[in-house]
Image (tube, rainbow, N blue to C red; front, side, top):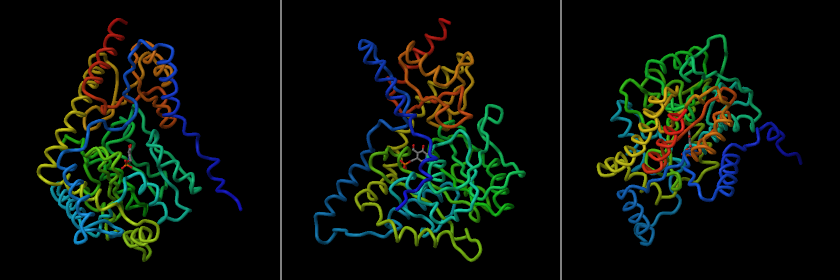
Length: 395
Ligand code: PLP
């Protein structure tokens, strides 16, 4: 027996552990100081009342012989897929319900989708990036090349025709940079994918944070994307489902090559390795699309959006360069005074007792940058902003 030796090539995942460790050591040494955490990208507000009511009702369904559910469809219940379909239709994207696959979250599907692609594909991943895209490909032994996201391109790399890629990851609005592509910019990526016979794996986990009309909420807002793109989305950040677990993946029937249909391959893959998302959870997720549910999740999103605006206006006031803050729950700032990411982490922790995430943990191009999240409470965010303001205004 041999283990998968590709695991040796995965970078030790120490980022959040190291962040937690440094913050814990600081707190132990300074128990009188209150440390404010704007580091981890998890939500803090509870589920919407409409979701909770639907979850309770679904639990009751399971208690009665007439409404009890056993194994559900691999691809998700019709009531939820129809809800997702109608949600897309409201943004002008027309899908068939059989192009939507319900999952237990975007992370699983982003990793599992690789099952349907050949090992020989070259993968293009932006740097910096959500680490899952890199690690899942390294585990499978695939060749990865990077698209440089930098200050000069606003952390939104555009296609380079000198580079030949088969599988392209795009995350917009981006984690960690908060930068979001416009529909016009995505047209360029769709054109590149079509000309190179490539597929775009489009991660829309943060689409609900988009407020500017020219920015893309779905890759399918670009004509022709249905021939070359798969979209991953999640209820995690949209509706606070990080601990409840539900997401969905869109695979258009038009996505075909060499006699293969991506939609059919994925269905076959799921039917083999996945037995569906719990009925109770899918009922909760479906409630997100009711009129009441939409109103309630928007009220929660507004809290995070306001937090993001506080942090962004603090950066504006201090003249610190950043991306995100608008159309995203992340603020990706350039560390002041030429500091490195970890240097700034320690500086902010020691002098303002604010914890963020060092950009260097997301890729080489993240060095010198820093991520703050808007997912904290309004009170924590306001206090953190006041402390950062204070720190820099004093000089
Ligand atoms: N995609 C991105 C860009 C994320 O930042 C996250 C979570 O932080 C996910 C996907 C995972 O989402 P889920 O909770 O649906 O697995």
